[in-house]
Image (tube, rainbow, N blue to C red):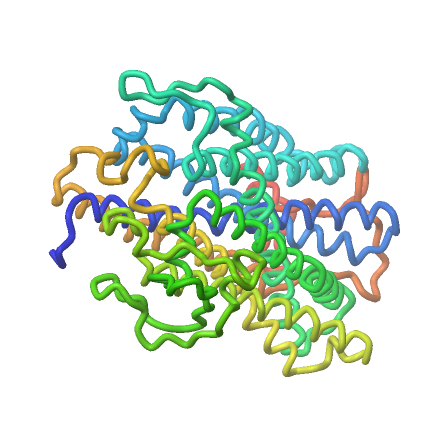
Length: 480
């Protein structure tokens, strides 16, 4: 069907499941750190706004965390079901790395998550804050191990091959492989930026509908400070990441640039837009800027960038896809930087919370960070093809021996279940966002904490009407 084979369906299935999964950890990483900052600010300033925001975003964090765990388990099983030959070849490296993630990050998160979500009235303030910080650190440790595994597949080292299997010889070399530091910084920063625009979009939505209070303003203000500072840093990290990729995966860079051949000693131009044609081996309708390709990728005006025709056709990534996925990522990155700069200008004019054109931009930029993460992930993974372990094992040699019919049925099942299950979860999460943080303006309140009658975060009761009685709340908490 459509010229597809079982291998193609296995790749589509993995791409589909990882596209769902990667969104949840990205928001989890950013929100966990955001919650730690909010609780720390509340403890320092005793400003109830930070406390109210903590309770609001902790509910959304809990729902997102749960969906991330479920979607991640499915991917782990796919290594054995759909990619058994890869597991047999490289499992001695990827298996331990994923095990380290469970032993260090997942256990840390699981150990403190319950205290963080349900211990607001049951433990001391310092212990609760410590639990929140531990959960945030756990998300970053998880990122460390996952990116170590993926980076090793991109730039493998610290091993030898014995009887057709990878045998680790240097675990420090395996973990800290050449591309790992750049991928780790790039992904962690992307998670923070994506979360900032998610939070900022939520605040803009409420402001545009006339809900203007200190909590909403604080959400927008903190999000835009993060965008202003971190989005340009992400661009710098991306530049270093590109230089590293040029050194270790030159074919990927050639595909990203849609660059087919060098002419004499001429510097490489930058192709802004065009349509790379893999059959005709040229980029049609190319809009070029002379010298800029060399300047960006080699930081010189005379060095050339490797061209696709320098690699055998069977070793070339699909330039048509990665050319455009990369430009989607970069284009959204520039929009993020612009949004941050505009927010600074409006802040100085005391109109950050009232400028409707800016608020509409902030609203529509809400999913931009997540879209950029997906585009970057497609660029990274499709740009690695045709290798599953770069230079060592081809993707075609890594898949299990399944039939086309088997892969078709499981793919359809995944699509139906994922859209039903995670669609409902995302819908519920958006319902929480639409409600906004509960504030106690004009009412006598306490500061919460141990011994105080402050309702702890309950994700499943968060979207209920405000009149929910104590018995119903306790019942929901027991169900959780």
